[in-house]
Length: 73
View 1 (cartoon, helix red, strand yellow):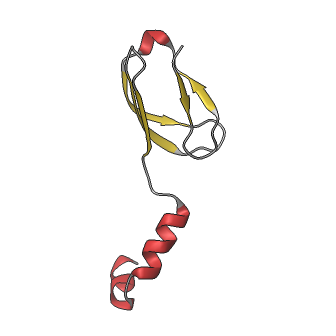
View 2 (cartoon, helix red, strand yellow):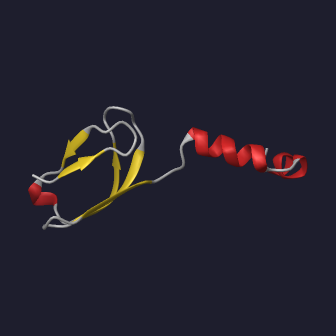
């Protein structure tokens, strides 16, 4: 069975061999983040975060000017 490691908490998630190749979203059962996953039948697996983390969003929010913050509220 192909195994995927969560990019946030590191938990291993097993993908059923019958559902490979798989290209889509996967949610971690431990921490709940959504990852974009591409699993092939060989050893090739690509896992990346689908949405930015709260820390990344906070950093972006702090860089916005007051006018930009008012537009996005």
